[in-house]
View 1 (cartoon, rainbow, N blue to C red):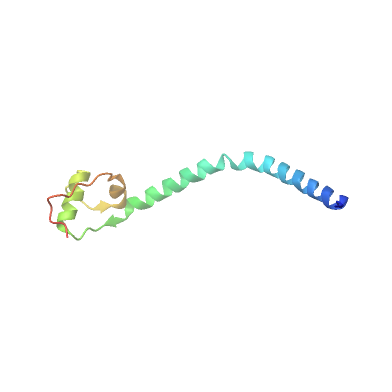
View 2 (cartoon, rainbow, N blue to C red; view 1 turned 90 degrees about the horizontal axis):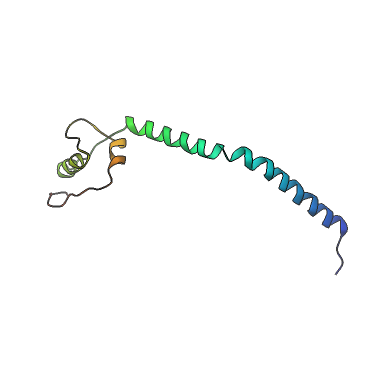
Length: 94
């Protein structure tokens, strides 16, 4: 089996280029990832604060408000994101 030296040298050059491109790109992009995630989370939470949520079932609405300790006022998506446990037993949720 004969190896073509041009192909071998070309593959080696491409491998070295890829290594150095990754070596310079990764340190530049690594700090950007947490920053982008933080920015996305901030934007999502900001947008969620303005959106009101309607719960048409009065018994489910009462259970959610009780769990959130928010008896009055509009419910927002941000309120529902805080909800981790909901016990609606013994209620007539439809």
